[in-house]
Length: 252
Image 1 (cartoon, one colour):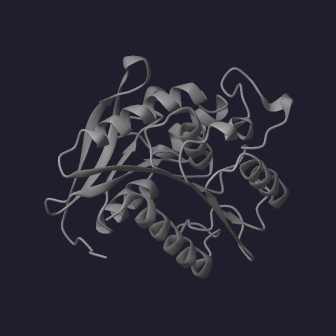
Image 2: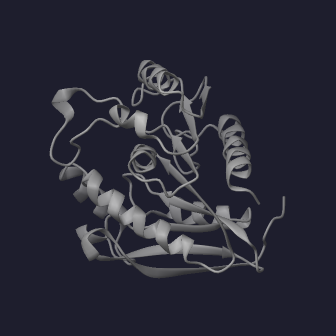
């Protein structure tokens, strides 16, 4: 694998859900490519340093990468404090799944319009972003691989459904349009191991192409180097699984 010490990073404006302009952070490896693409879907802590840095990490590994600011409408411009914006979004019950799909579709379209792109696009998301990545891969057919890292609320009770989240993602499984990678900590409660089992059973039922990896000694957010949740050994193995999965399905 090539490692790209040089890269170009910048904010771009894309046309999100219902025609709303939103900001996205992009990272492009040095060279002409062609490069596969990764669309990152950030978690509820928002369009944060972690996701900006992870966007660059994918470029370092030879991917065109983009991470759209899904909280732009909540005052989450490029200069806003992501913690403050996330607190506002959390208090409002998150963002609508349909809005996320529209914004993510815009990021996928941006990727497919880039020179030096090899025509393949993967989704990467953790926590709420993992849930969102799975939803997108079920509702759209324009991505080639999906990585869901400990996405919670894939399994939902009827009492949890509302106007923003009208359908439980597990009930969309039959429409999954691409291979799925799932990484989970066995100490997590959202999703719990039992919920991961339910989702895996549904994937098997519908004959989907997937691989799940579960880690002992790890809970929610075990990739998050800036938090006590971080588990270095499990995170290192998890990253190797992510790059192997995308290398297989997106090419290099």
